[in-house]
Image (cartoon, rainbow, N blue to C red; front, side):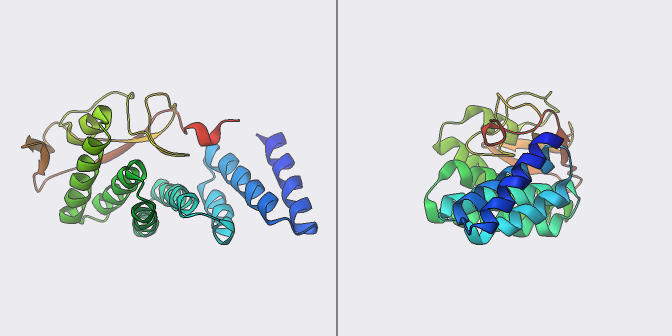
Length: 210
């Protein structure tokens, strides 16, 4: 990781020296990934926030905001996680990308649970569930409506970085304690005593692989 970080920082220096915005964007992306991999979430946030003005497409902003929001969630800064999750959600809706709408909705809901805004969290989990149905993502549906604690395994899929998938190792996931809620008509009906937890197994999807 140290060698990779040094290499990416060298790329960034060259990109800045010769005013190469695409190369700068790519270097910042890579540096952020390295920081996130080793759990240096604030450094990852700082790096990716520097990249935001260089993002060329709405879809690029969608995953970038999601990655930043996920890092804030890891730092227990739920308000910021919600803020960036909502920005990711908005970009995903503009892009018409249902998979990313699904991922962003889960992130926002997780942040809202930490903020104890349970009503809004339920609403966003319901949105995520509907989007999972639209893309026929049965694994995502099961994760969202599960009322027991599943082991690390199949999760949400559909994008880069922290997006959850069956093939990922170390992705944040969600689980519901056995008494947290109940399924009613395909939608989770949460009790007032809901406790939602985020667990971490092995981290990252294809955006973090070479």
